[in-house]
Image (cartoon, rainbow, N blue to C red; front, side, top):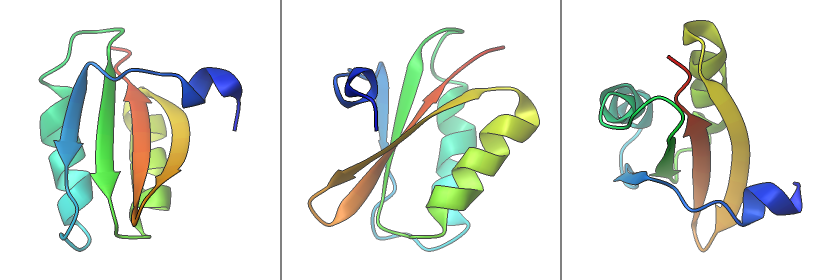
Length: 83
């Protein structure tokens, strides 16, 4: 993971911990509409499927998946809104 990703401060955070697939992905889809183009959405999830699901969704719809940061007991997935 690059140091730049580790220092990102998201513009909005969605807490989807405790929800199973497809909950975190659905929360990400709702959350991306709440940030402006160029801003960063963080999705907190403890569902391991979110790692692939959110990255694939971001690529499919044209957003930039910035990476995954490990936190205590969950992942922090970062997506930049591109359109």
